[in-house]
Length: 82
Image 1 (cartoon, helix red, strand yellow):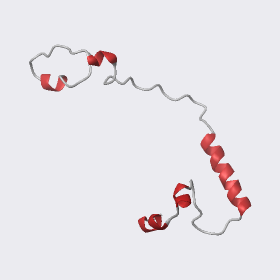
Image 2: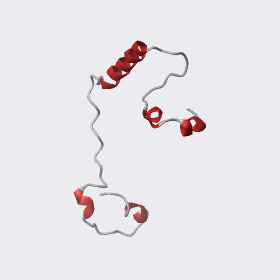
Image 3: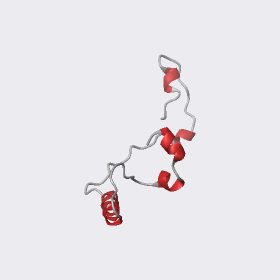
């Protein structure tokens, strides 16, 4: 959809999950397509999601200040989570 088409689109057209670009499908064909897309979207994968990396910036220990040590790279290390 081009920018000009988006300006002319109705709110229902902007919310649509998919749109017909070519042809004139009847109601039964659109219903079958909707069911197929919904089934694919709701089907989960068989393998579990990989565990998330721990977020060290929001870790409670990050709220405690550690002493700063002078030396090479100290300015960089002062902003890193511990």
